[in-house]
Length: 191
Ligand SMILES: C[S@@+](CC[C@H](N)C(=O)[O-])C[C@H]1O[C@@H](n2cnc3c(N)ncnc32)[C@H](O)[C@@H]1O
Image 1: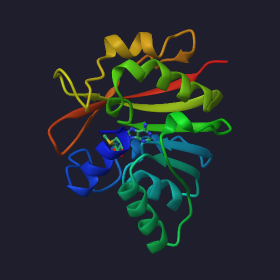
Image 2: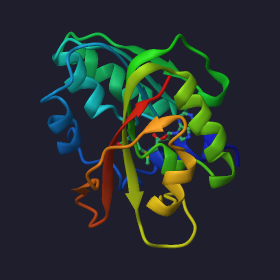
Image 3: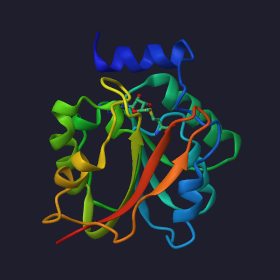
């Protein structure tokens, strides 16, 4: 099964336990300090965060590999007469001019760990120097996936300090209705 078929089947069978049905409190917190800017949302899913960013006047580009996710988001945008650039495709095949900010909500945990380094490079190359990446690292504590457990002991070398500035504080735990949680870390791309 291709990645696209895998994710499309998840949406068609409503096996979307990751979907909160609303935007994440992690986004609400980030929006206390983030001014409207050009922002990228990879693996956006049904796009609840995309809708909230559009309501607040951000210039958004959202990417997802699954048609039902993109269709759902398009319908929500039309319903509220909002705009965003939606790209249906495999992010690894997409190259865009760098953004001011990236909202990474559990796309990393959806990608095979063998591709994590490639994904980190993709994020780095899609962010302007000094740009912010809000990374929500999924914590499952389990083997296998998706979702793959994003242990901080692996995230630190993946998002290496030579390329990323990490916050001094420990990440906020963002609780999910499924009982799992994510660790939110606001990283900054170094020059
Ligand atoms: C765990 S879900 C998270 C969705 C959304 N961010 C949320 O939190 O509700 C992962 C998403 O990444 C998408 N995805 C997985 N691999 C992808 C790829 N290579 N390119 C683009 N999207 C991808 C899936 O279709 C799915 O919507």
